[in-house]
Image 1 (cartoon, rainbow, N blue to C red):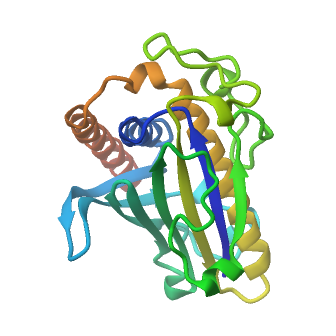
Image 2: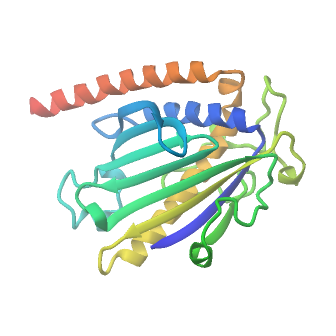
Length: 265
């Protein structure tokens, strides 16, 4: 298992981030779905357990074309479908991704904590055990200065150039110079990512590759989050739940069409 803790500082408050994150997840889900691939939302409902209450989601990711060729080559068709279960009790969240084909031999677990007024300097924000602390590698992501080359897809300056974007609603940006030290408001996402791929001969290579994908995803997502500020700024959680419902309805139609098309061929 390869464990890394990613730290991403953002020019917003915690409450703004909660809205912005869900807004961009909905946007991304629709943008990346089509031709039978993408995100299928099975469940999106409130949950409560002995420790927390929040929103539970269960999604299915159809990712055939996005899996590395060397992995697809040894897996049967359709085996690349992944299940994602997430418990969002903001500011704490946990996401677990599994694969029906690999079962207990594959998992990605992301535990996140979002800290208001923080600039990424907490040593142990997630209260990790000494054993995990010894294993983890800390990776700090600066959305303004990190490389603009991606494992998944190329950089889109119109949506992701935080060094040029300025919000007309919030009057924030662009993110330049020592913005992490000076921006106001500010918060940091701490994300502990544990990747376990128990496949002899491929484990080390695949776990390292998947962490590079995770880093690219986090960088890209948070750049888009900042540059989409004029879309989500001022929205309420009620607005977000309505957007999520509309997104699910649109995706349901998309996947129904795809299945119908497959059945007739």
